[in-house]
Image: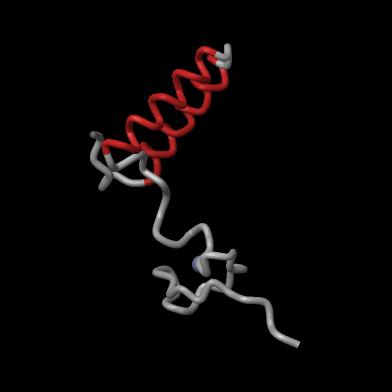
Length: 84
Ligand SMILES: [Zn+2]
């Protein structure tokens, strides 16, 4: 029987291989740090369009909650991440 695939990335905290279960992409959700927002112009446009369509659908509260949560994560996670 094959063992469950592990992430296997070297952790910064212990220097040992990460023991988290690996998803299809081979690395766990801790790998590479958190998402910091769209980087490309196309990505920024796409997220703007998605946000506007959610607004149009009357999902304003959800949109704002998501945005605030994202801002908060950004603030607490890293001071290295520069605001655009
Ligand atoms: Zn990992």
